[in-house]
Length: 228
Image (cartoon, rainbow, N blue to C red; front, side):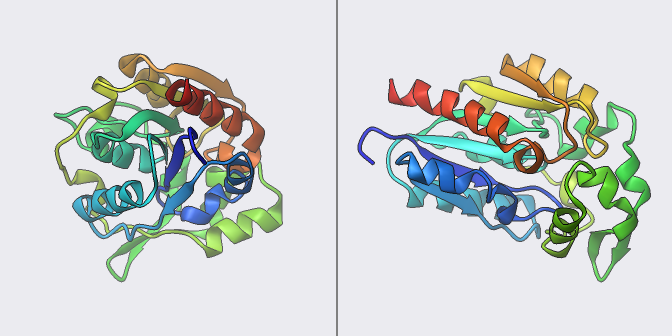
């Protein structure tokens, strides 16, 4: 793996680290060390610490890849001195004076939030909302996403920790044009604000599952900048 960038993934809500399972084998076969942080969505501070541990566990320069709320995590954890590139997948990317919720509140509410239930101290995605989350996947894959969903505490998006890595590190952004979970206009605005190299794909909120080849190519492009 000499000379190869490592890849660290950070998942979001309602899709755990297994949502990168169509990307990881290909990247490993190409010689990259890969780690997918499995965080508990109990606190922003704890989740950032979990991503940081994953960074510390892999060698060399690191490409951080965040999906959805995972974009908030790579924005914070990405200040790590071995992180050289950030890849956002339909992701949040709050500025230093914003929370994840602040960023979302600047854009119209998306349909998925009509299908949630707050119970047992967590926010659950109802089965009726899975189409708004990953409706371009085959039915069996949608059910798998629902079954393995990562479930957050209700105040997770209003929590704050310091760090805005995209202000100083090169970024790539994949906009999901058909997203019904994170507003695509938020995604486009976030990519423009950070000056990211931007790609758009006609996808639901989970392009890493519905268009894995597109996402792989973006990650490879980011990795090449660290390997040059």
